[in-house]
Amino acid sequence: MAPNRSVADSRSVIDCRNLLTDQLMIAKSWQEKAASTQDVFARFFFLYTAFNALYFAWAKAGRQGNDEKQQIEYLLKKLPGITATEILDGVSTEIQFFLARNTPIRDMRNQGCNDPLQGEVSDDRRTAVWDDLRGGQEGEVSAKRLVALGKVVYFVLCNLVHGSKAERRGDDKDVITNAIGPLCEILCAAVAYTETELGRR
Image 1 (spheres, rainbow, N blue to C red):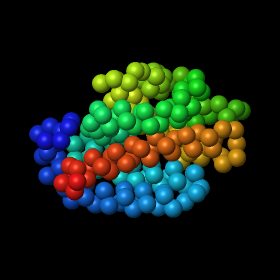
Image 2 (spheres, helix red, strand yellow):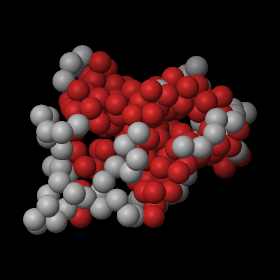
Image 3 (cartoon, helix red, strand yellow):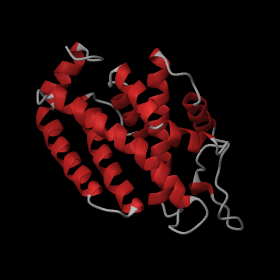
Image 4 (cartoon, one colour):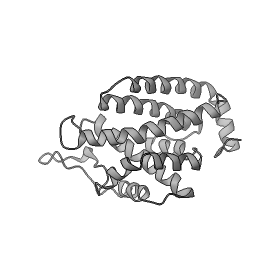
């Protein structure tokens, strides 16, 4: 039995093999497209679309709800602890970029009419994600930090897709650029995990 895999997981793979197989194909096609573009905004979108395909499929297999942050957490908690640690070590520079900002990625849905550049930063759930990301490196803490990193990438996606980031304004491009590394590593691990569970590795 694969690491972090329960009997329930085995049944989920059996019950949802067709969906998981199809979503894996979709994820890998977007992953390949991401590798072919030099535009960082396009690459981020393509990589996230690939990741979305997998966390949606695993959430469906595990009978999870529709909350995307919970779906991301559900998939990332399935990855072996050593994988989580390796990802965190590999993108430590990007993690430090986000932590150096001192505040979570702002929720730009709460922009004010007179101050469009200021989103909401007081959401306790976002602050908790930042606290988790600052944690240590060992055991369960690594898994918790990886989930937090996945949620940071999700927050970046939300602000981009809802039209609150610009290619040439402030540090928007830096934010996207520094989100690509973690997203790419998380996606590669998710693809590998899915292939293993489907017996393709």
